Amino acid sequence: MANHDICTKTMWALSVPLCILLILFVALTAYATYSFHIFVPLAPANNIDCEQMFNTTSETYLSYIENRTLLEPSQDDRNCFQIRRRRYLPADMPKSMAGNHNMFFIRVVSKDYDFVEEVLTMMHSPIHFFCFALDITADALFKERMFRLGDCQVNVLVPRQLFNTSTAHGMLSAHRKCLKEIDEFEWRHAVITAEHDIPLHSTKFLSRRSRRLRDMVEINGVHFKEETLLSADPNDTSSQLYQVSRNWIQHLCSVATISHSQHKVLYDYLMKTPDFDLPNDSHRETSVVEKNCDTKVYDVDGSCLYAMEDFPAIRNTTRLFIRADPHYDFGFVQCVHEVVFERTFFDPISNKNANNYLYGSHKNLIDDYRN
Ligand SMILES: *[C@@H]1O[C@H](CO)[C@@H](O)[C@H](O)[C@H]1NC(C)=O
Ligand SMILES: *[C@@H]1O[C@H](CO)[C@@H](O)[C@H](O)[C@H]1NC(C)=O
Ligand SMILES: *[C@@H]1O[C@H](CO)[C@@H](O)[C@H](O)[C@H]1NC(C)=O
Ligand SMILES: *[C@@H]1O[C@H](CO)[C@@H](O)[C@H](O)[C@H]1NC(C)=O
Ligand SMILES: *[C@@H]1O[C@H](CO)[C@@H](O)[C@H](O)[C@H]1NC(C)=O
Ligand SMILES: *[C@@H]1O[C@H](CO)[C@@H](O)[C@H](O)[C@H]1NC(C)=O
Image (tube, rainbow, N blue to C red; front, side, top):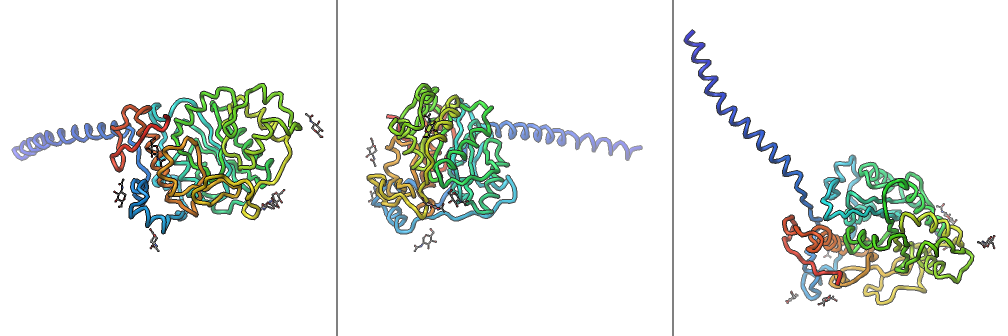
């Protein structure tokens, strides 16, 4: 009897600290769960000190130019978790960063999975859609990885059909497949870019800019109204629409912004214009090369391929996208990624609380690029 008493007392004595521990545990769990809902962007990781790249007389810059970072393919993934661990692709984002004008980014890709993933990460935002149409020359591993990427991310579409994009009509059919894929969704503008295009601005900036277009279509910086598209005659090779769109297609379709209401009319028109061969690795465009190209390295269509030499100047350019070759200078792509990351998450104008968010260097390098 006495023994039993002692036992009960001990149990009571023990249960008090146990209760306190339990309460503490519950409180901590609740706090942690709450903390996960505070949005903390993760800065892109690379081995280059990009800030040093602004100083073209610095030791770091000069030795980088001697020995550039090139694309090194990552191991094939087994599941979605590996992609998410490698890349920052948030499923939710504050409206102040994502914007609310839904965009659709479309491009044809054929190789370099890691470059595709890098550029997707630069532009990713959960409220926008991304479609990658695959060229027929894509190898088995590239296809497998692209299909997995599409299966892992709800807002990334990778049609199973492959396209022969060696001609204008093949390229346009690939875009059209993407446009039809989510036609019923509420996207407002589609941005068509070439395989090697990289953005210089945040997706929110692109979406704001597109909103001003309303129902118009912008090809190579030229605006076309609905009336122009509806009355366009594909046999009239002297029209501005014909000349601008032909030039755009010749440059592997970079860059056009197309409103949801006009994409059918535009692509119906384009598919009626004559088909022609697009430049490729064995037939490069050499007669119309981009002027003032510092690197003197060109893409198959004669577009300049930008590299680290151009990095100090990119904050000053008003271009939306530039070309870069991951096999010539992938480090440049990674440094541009840092700049776009800042513009996305630390823009002092559109994100008032920018300084509350974490970033590797804790430094705000941004000038207002919209001046
Ligand atoms: C650039 O690097 C050089 C060499 O390291 C240094 O002397 C110079 O002060 C640097 N310039 C700036 C603006 O940091
Ligand atoms: C070039 O850079 C890579 C990695 O940064 C390094 O492993 C390699 O030794 C360098 N090569 C030369 C010739 O400096
Ligand atoms: C793609 O189309 C072109 C022109 O029609 C043709 O010459 C080429 O063989 C095709 N490529 C493949 C891989 O089918
Ligand atoms: C364009 O030309 C083709 C062949 O010359 C002709 O069949 C077609 O009807 C013409 N289209 C228009 C809209 O005039
Ligand atoms: C490259 O383009 C030429 C003509 O423009 C074409 O004949 C050839 O089939 C193309 N090569 C590939 C691999 O598509
Ligand atoms: C970029 O613009 C800023 C201010 O307008 C200027 O001070 C700077 O020299 C420019 N940089 C380059 C590389 O053109």
